[in-house]
Image (tube, rainbow, N blue to C red; front, top):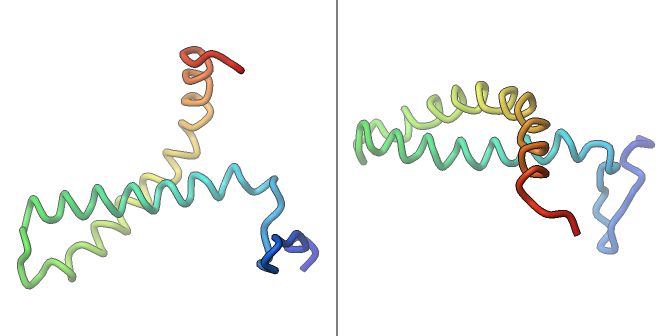
Length: 88
């Protein structure tokens, strides 16, 4: 497992920096779809007994769409941000 060679000071193995372009959108898509699907499911069915049966499916479906879309639009978002934000 050569690709997990890098370690932090506390001994936890880390991925090489080349994976940051996948890991960041992965984490962002998981967190954002969690929040958005939670709010959407609450809005549509409320705190019903079925909530915890419906919400994971809504979350999974929204994540399946959000992650690839995020991978596709992130380069555009970076360029737009560079046009708006002054460099250091």
